[in-house]
Length: 103
Length: 155
Image 1 (cartoon, chains in turn purple, red):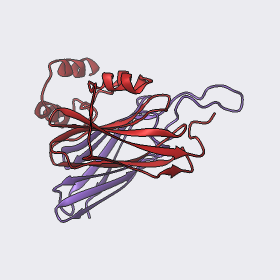
Image 2 (cartoon, each protein chain N blue to C red; image 1 turned 120 degrees about the horizontal axis):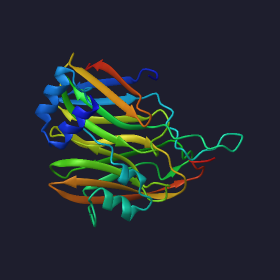
Image 3 (cartoon, rainbow over the protein chains, first blue to last red; image 1 turned 90 degrees about the vertical axis):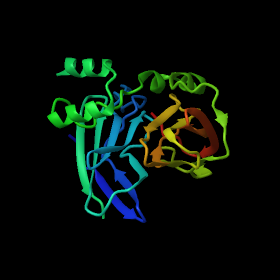
């Protein structure tokens, strides 16, 4: 579901920096449409990042994360060509996984 | 399949077993590790949020940094980062005091991941932004006030 994530991962001096831009509405459930009806909340609740098959970051999001979330983090290790994968799950049960290679 | 997953979680299995299960295709990879902490994300006030996270009375620390703008023009997109020099950090959380729900995000860091994350958050109004860090089993906190000229939770 959803559009692909943009993931960049770069290794420098033994540390891999991952930057991800995720396409998601992140609706808070507090906004109203033009008729005054509340727009139901729809947001990512969990995001897990893996290097090859090892989890390097697991995160829980609330509604306060911006639309189309951006996330950057660093972990020790990783090498050129290694696989980075990110998976998210939202409060409606949608999931998506995207992969990138470390450059 | 769901029942199986419940049982596995109840059994309090380690990551290795989860890995095996994931490899065997019984559970979706990556989705079985974190159980979304509903109590913490539903909590309205700072104190309730800290309680739900099991982090009552965190100590202020100069070794924790909150990065972000002093003034955010658009509250819908406020870049916020948390960094720390404390050792053995296992958890990092971002809290915004005056948002409807204080907790914005919580990150669990396995060994080898640096305690330094950046993201973007929504802020309804000018507020203190707190970074909560768990280091060596203890909680530490730092704060920064970010002024918002246009709220991000408009309706």
